[in-house]
Structure formats: structure tokens, C-alpha cells
Image (tube, rainbow, N blue to C red; front, side, top):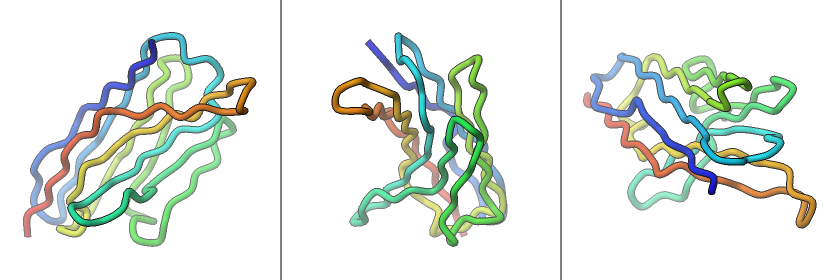
Length: 120
């Protein structure tokens, strides 16, 4: 059974930084992409960073230049380094691994979520 375990969330003042980690356990297979999403109360879950197996990264404008996603393939771990945090970054952050599966082509695994709270 695949599990994604997140760590690194917490409370930080505006302008501060945090580093989130997400490690996979179990037989996950070939991971095609990893990502971080967040969901604030009353909002839909949104992508904040993604990285492909080839290392290509994607960020929305809201976090570009402040967040950096990286991965350690050997450890099946993905990281999210967050700088210059703002109160609007407050949310539950979820990691996602998209792995290859013959049918239907891919499968998504999710972490349990970690709370990030940025105080003003």
C-alpha cells in the first residue's frame, strides 16, 4: 500500500520561510510527476508547484519566485521550499505523486495534508 507522509508545516510570521517534505513508502512504481497543492477554507484545491520526472517545474504566478519544488528520486521524496511567505499562503498543503499505471494510464496518490499558517 502506497503512503505519502508529509512534514514541515507550521506557524510562521509573514516574510518567513518553511520547507515541506513528502516521502513515499510502498510500491509506487514509476513516478511521472510530483506536485504540491493547497486548499484554504472555502476555496478549491489549487496547484502551487509541480515537477516532472525530467525536472521541469511549474508554478502559478501567485508563488513564482517565492516557492521552489525539488525532488530526490532515490528517496522518492519531494520538497517545497517556501520563502517570503504571506498570510494568503495560509492553507493545508498536500503533496501529490502521479505514477504510471497501465490502465487507466496513471494514478494519483495524495498525502494527508500539512497545515501552513502565516501570521501578519
